[in-house]
Length: 159
Image (cartoon, rainbow, N blue to C red; front, side, top):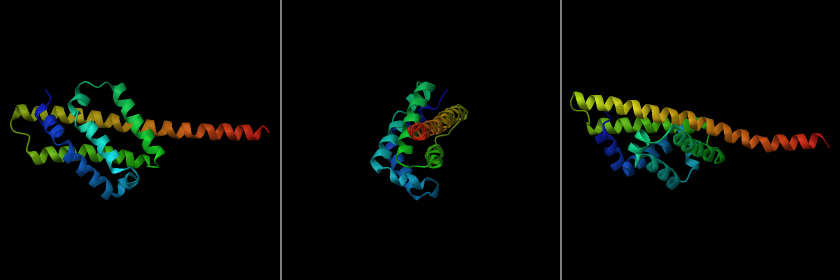
């Protein structure tokens, strides 16, 4: 039993949470490279997750999560954002959501606590998979970028 009330709270406050996360990204030394990404692009990506968090947690398959995070990571790699900054952005997002829920005082009784624990498990699973898929997507981007150089060097060496 997931704490849908808490998920809906996050979804309703997606704009506020996105703004707070962007501010964190821009002030943290661990996500300094994200300053290269246009603010509206960051806002759109963050809100895309938060506005439909219940869908991401409950109905999206691993393949859909993989596709989403591969796309983000490949794009960030092409923008010159370090993979560590991408990873820290995901970690900071997960932490920020829990800080938000704690500020809201969403836990009340045993049933709510159980629901919150289930929500924590689902959020951890989602963001941990996102972290791994983003790293794989970033690595794939780098590998694809090296293929043309390797082919070019091979062609030059045979001349």
